[in-house]
Image (cartoon, rainbow, N blue to C red; front, side, top):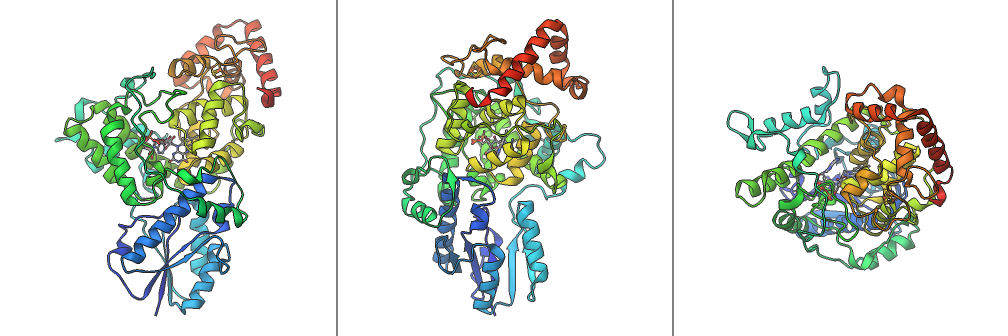
Amino acid sequence: TTTLRLILGDQLNPLHSWFAEVRAEVVYVLMEVRQETDYVHHHAQKIIAIFAGMRAMARQLEQGGHRVHYLRIDDAANLQSIPANIDALLAHYGASGFEYQEPDEYRLDVQLADYAAQLKVPGTMAGSEHFLTARGEAGRIFANRAQWLMEYFYRQMRLVHGVLVEPGGKPAGGQWNFDHDNRKPWRGTPPEPFDTRAQHDHSALWASIEAAGVGSFGRPDAVRIVWPQDRAEALTHLDAFIDHGLPHFGHYQDAMHTTATRLFHSMLPFALNTKMLHPREVIAEAEHAWRAGRAPLHAVEGFIRQILGWREYVRGVYWANMPGYERHNVFGHDTPLPSWFWDGKTKMRCLGHAIGQSLDDAHAHHIQRLMIIGNFALLAGLDPHHVHEWYLGVYVDAVEWVEMPNTIGMSQFADGGLLATKPYVSSAAYIDRMSDYCKGCHYDKKARLGETACPFNALYWDFFERNAERLSGNQRLGMVYRNLFKMNDGARAACASQAASVRARLEEL
Ligand code: FAD
Ligand code: SF4
């Protein structure tokens, strides 16, 4: 008798124990379905890259002798939803069991658990064998603590997993955190590493996605997709990053530049989030590079903090707060996204670049996501749920468990500080210090008032003014509020009316 095993589009790990032996009674099922392309409006490259990865995985399994049933998006037998397709395949194979791997999205977790529960044959969930922590682990760590804190979680992880620790549990280099070394602007040197990623022509796949009527946005660029389609490519890219990007990752982690969109970032989250790579091997390679003298400690620690710290931590926040986390909106923001979120056409050079790059490449690095796009969205009072849907759609690496806490929590502070200790917002001064965006911008980075004043400036002070009751007691914002309270009433009122006028003409900015 046959057992069906479902592999989701973000479960492309060929090293999963499922595949350790070839079993004639097991049929692996992969399906390209409208259910998954349509739950939010997606960037074209995200759809192409995931389907291409699924197709490559199916080929690899077949070459390894496994039985595979693959449903393409334009397959006549495709019923376009996971339960409907599984029902049909259970009948087709006369199968006596259904298995799936632990989904990472709440939506799919509920759907598949409900589906499995009502089946007449046994339906069972296997682990995904991907993360370093279980779903509820961060929740347990913080169960008896007043506040969730990434730094506390991260240090626990360093100790538990023996990463960058010396005998006796001391942190390598005597410090847990080298953040203060990692805030340099980039002025053209060292040069951005050459982009060694293989390019793929997926125009036939793209044509079939379009023919199936799947809606999307962003530049498809289907003839030169750079996202890895299998583990071997992801490993090659990881090695190139460790050799050429990692040594400079630390210093320029927060830098932004119009001529270098990748800088020294890894571009690995697509491979990680689709499980082509395991976080443990990425962390181990980075630590090894430091121990072998090939990358400085501040860079390696900064990089490992993102994966062992932030990535696992936000997953913990997600599972501790679902369902319902997506609806947090403590500031009551309800402004729709201006139309330039969909075409990048704004006179604000920073947003034009960060959004334009997101639409072109389906990627922007962390500081662009946080301190340009998210910063503006929060200051302008955009609806956090709409902001979340935009982020979930636009980035190739966007899977809800990681995107939602980053957007709703870290970037929009819509959860009131469950995840982050303060809202991440700034005026033009920070953006100017960390990028070359302000040079040549239509707006004046120094001005607070007037038609051509940088919109960030008045919005910034007005945000803290409007939310003084909620935020002025926050220790990390002491300096901001001291400066705000030093301004005279006239200056504060002028900021408020300038901010109101900016908010009234978001579309024209
Ligand atoms: P690097 O800068 O090289 O970082 C290394 C790795 O660390 C990444 O591959 C990623 O896996 C991990 N990482 C870094 N920061 C974070 C973080 N804050 N949370 C979780 N993992 C992290 N990351 C996603 O993977 N998917 C998302 O949908 C996503 N949405 C985001 C939305 C917002 C509003 C913000 C502020 C951040 C978001 N991030 C998301 C986190 C982070 O911005 C991206 O992982 C990062 O920009 C990817 O750039 P990079 O290519 O090279 O990673
Ligand atoms: Fe952005 Fe303001 Fe700088 Fe223009 S001046 S790039 S709008 S921060």
